[in-house]
Length: 229
Length: 229
DNA sequence: CGTGCGTTTGAGTGAATTCAACGGCTGTGG
DNA sequence: CCACAGCCGTTGAATTCACTCAAACGCACG
Image (cartoon, rainbow over all chains, first blue to last red; front, side):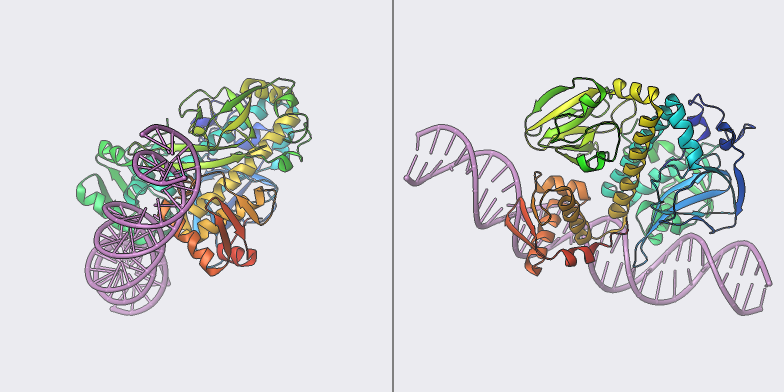
């Protein structure tokens, strides 16, 4: 659940996390992070793998997945350009990460970051603060998964993506319907039906299946009871 | 989702967290934490309240709740004797906390803990590690809420409580059925039906409504696909 | 022009919910 | 000591929302 947007990270006085700044996440720690490319659906790391690295999406999008033995899948989070992930692991990754689209990713050794934390407590405290934030988001997602209707989940998702995207009211979704369904704890059919229903109501427009236009944000917001500040 | 059991905390080389040791959580930081009593259903802190304290359950049990405007409720976690909670908040609490039973709770100023972290990076790194662990648990709960059946949720819950309790196969549940339902994203009726169904199968015994005996642990474990290590 | 993938749409099913009633325990007051 | 009220938990019946199964559509690509 760690998806530090550049703007969030800007509040952290440890350097430039911003994706558009010259300094990448890795350089903050004085480490030239390796820059890797992943094609669509390529695995960045697997569940159970030792968590030796922390990652930042430079270009593209990444999803984290949990798989059950009978094939049921859950998508824990989506990470977009600028987002940092992989620090939420303990010694081993509790889930796998895969490229949603062709992506470019920077890695930094986890030990390097932990070393900086151990040296500079203030930095560590900032990380802690971030971790707390992401724990809160995890709680919001639990409420969504436990108690919200299909329509509430989908509108929640759209508003979340809109908040993370550059343009407030026009979304280009990098992920397919199956990914969205597994993220929201629904089936692909329910996601599809809910979206077309919203379109028929006039609340959104779907010029292309991966492109969503928020026509009536107030209506969307009234559907999903976002308590969180 | 931070529920550090005494045994978990024992791995942290910053002092004695253990509930049964002489040193309370607070004393680790050289601060005499205030010791408060809460009666059943009393509020420990409210959603939105500034998060100035970190708490440790000395006696009793605590639940954290999120409420939606139409009354739907979600229980984020249960904290039992020895567990620490409240650190998972940012500046303000994202959920409320209430005593499940009459409870005794120690508080420590959050700032004191953050100060220790800022001073001693190693301590902070340990806290970070803990936060990562709890983020992983949050992900496991999301998988449960998103993808598991009622029966899987209930068996998951029973095994979790068994793991946290002293006796491996006999549970005394401090919380009512409604709390369990809101924790698992089910209704009270479904929880009740699932439990009696498990009892009829012979997998568990229910000598009293709050007392559960695990008769066939293997059967329970086979029902819930615990991937997590 | 077909093939394959992703998405939509339809019909029927089902697991969990809602609505409703009942049973059992506890504490209180007559 | 019993009657009663108030919770809490269980059980039953009917409903519903999302799911499963199935088919068709549209688009990109060879």
